[in-house]
Image (cartoon, helix red, strand yellow):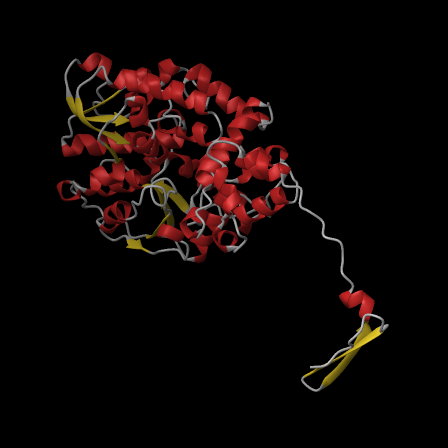
Length: 430
């Protein structure tokens, strides 16, 4: 290879693999001034306790390949880092509220850039500065006032039990210790489709002879989604209340309906004095599946959506599948994105209350993306095990024009149907 040998030459000449290339010497080789990055925006983030690891990013891009939000928008942790590095304020950016804390990025990140800590920490600062989306603030206010983000009366928290058709003991009236304290949570107590799953689970507990009780009006939201959305103070208030109520009663273990509550009880409540043996309802039922008389076949092609906070956050992938495999006639088909690589429903990290905000920044909801994948794999039923998901996916079935093509059911509903504990499929969803 040869080229011009003096800067005084106006043109240069390069020979590469026998080809002679010429061009302006000054344009190609004249030294350019070095411009320093203004890292103040990045330093603002990394100075926040819990958000330090954003500065570890070295732009490998692995997170972009697995980020569910990037499939429906222009977002990934790598992009967040780069935009912040170039001076964009994360505190003022829509990026701050798009993350669903699904944990898929942390699963593949070689530098352990931990968005599960970064986002709640930065969001907390944004909330304190009054920069959170209004619909999220409304959910916070409802939770603080009523103990649930739906704004429902605390006195009505156990009203669903009147429709259960089986005894559901409320601890304040039971006056006896129980083996299982069932922490029902908000959407299974108030939302119509959540109540359907609660009724199914109550009938299963009774069929199994489980000695259980619920807190009823003494229960408040576990608060984990509010914590991940930036309201740690609200989370601590809720947790301290729940711990106080639970400590009044004697029981051997807690069974939770909601994977988000499961995560809180496992990882957050112990630091506040609430160290309870806790399992998700699919784990509990999987240990007793041979005691449940599953006799009515469900000849359907069923696929399962792994909840982020049951799967990637807490490593439970097998219990829900064990339950589905036990149902006669049911064919379980796995979607391409399943187990560790499963898509997110979009409800985590406060996303449950940000659909209006997300509409302006995403091409479609994550729940819609997931429904389309379930249909692509020929499923008749999309089975779920998180109370956020039934309503999200049922809405997505309609909004994608697939009404009548895909049914969304909680695993508890499928088990209750097979065990003959629901009079007919029509009973689900009434």
